[in-house]
Length: 404
Ligand SMILES: *[C@@H]1O[C@H](CO)[C@@H](O)[C@H](O)[C@H]1NC(C)=O
Ligand SMILES: *[C@@H]1O[C@H](CO)[C@@H](O)[C@H](O)[C@H]1NC(C)=O
Ligand SMILES: *[C@@H]1O[C@H](CO)[C@@H](O)[C@H](O)[C@H]1NC(C)=O
Image 1: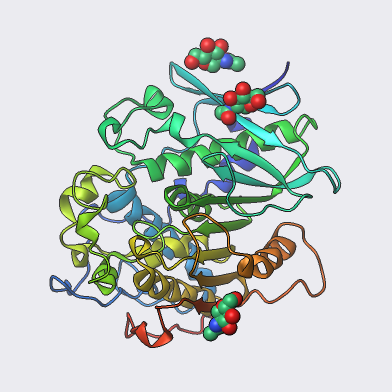
Image 2: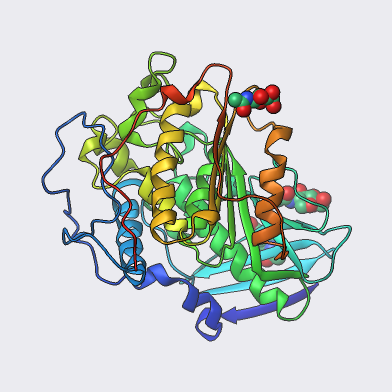
């Protein structure tokens, strides 16, 4: 067994890249929109208006606005995401089992991220962190996979909130929902890959890492891509509520789907923190942001959102919500780094071949670093037997500024 150890203070990339640990300015804990939106308002808040009420006009202001949104998402929705631990060890057994040991004060836990190496390509390989373990997108043969067993860190079963190795470290009363634990866990996997890559024990290039997941694991993928700036490409597959659909738009999918017959009802959902479920589930217009802004945390890095037309994934709401996120990419002048593709006619997490070209273009451009024509990446498309472009309603009255 080979083993590398570090106190994180000595590992520059780990702390330097955790930009959200040092916010530009703390958001007041009781922050709310002014003027407040009346209950039931469908309008998505303008993501460019900061906490002080000013609309940003420069690209350089996005970093601080992003930090505000990251704080709001933690305070109101996800629960707190702990920063780097006291120490982290990475060891590799049987060539491809990456054992990540994490100490926080006097408590220690570990988990294993199994790596599947490419059959072609050159070391160090680009890689995908696959939340939940088995990928449901076709990952090319020249890209590595690092499996993240999120359930062992935070159990998603509704009867077992706050159970898992994350809570062994931080205590059962910690406020993180499972999406927040997913963010934390992806960051620890990147810490470990970065550490072990330095000695060649892991043949993965930490600068070319993607994150992916489907359904509830897709929620964690979207949030992890948003919070950890070391993620180069985020591929979010078929998530719906609590990820790529906006809370204020949830009634758009009625009558085919009523969100309150689902796991998203108060008290049951494990993705969000309890504070969210108690305060906002029945009053989303009381939230000082919505999901379009949380997805925008990924900007300006690459984001591919794959959607289906399964009613429980709230396709109308999701498509409109991600359209609002795309405005942030447009404003930053990087429209080609975000695509939204809704394809119906398949079961949950069964990747349809029609999305292959778009996925290949994203992987080619943002993970493999291929020059030349790898395909169109500035895409917003919908193909469903029952959902038509005319079913999509405007969800906001603001326009994307042209940030200088
Ligand atoms: C991981 O933790 C388990 C206890 O949960 C322990 O038995 C095992 O030895 C640890 N593995 C390593 C490599 O530290
Ligand atoms: C990692 O791979 C080993 C060997 O195939 C297997 O026994 C173990 O269950 C895997 N661990 C996880 C977390 O998937
Ligand atoms: C939707 O996809 C099907 C199957 O790929 C294709 O035949 C059809 O032309 C597409 N429709 C639109 C409007 O793009």
